Length: 64
Image 1 (spheres, rainbow, N blue to C red):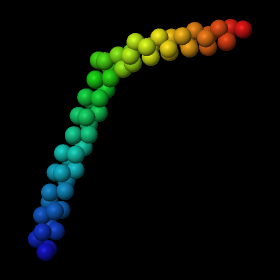
Image 2 (cartoon, rainbow, N blue to C red):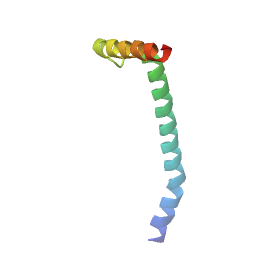
Image 3 (spheres, rainbow, N blue to C red):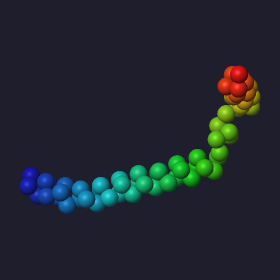
Image 4 (cartoon, rainbow, N blue to C red):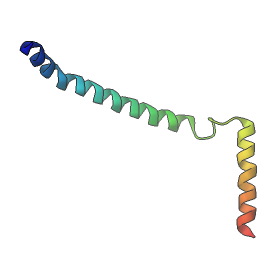
């Protein structure tokens, strides 16, 4: 039992390091993927037209 616990404590830093590197790589991949796709590629044409129309309405309200 003591040897099993000692093996777990010996492997824990390696496992934590692997998990942290995996999380860092996942974060970098996410940032690169979001910058590559751009903000408008996530929306369909109809959604983009809806957003544009509402933005124009808000501008008109703010000007008056």
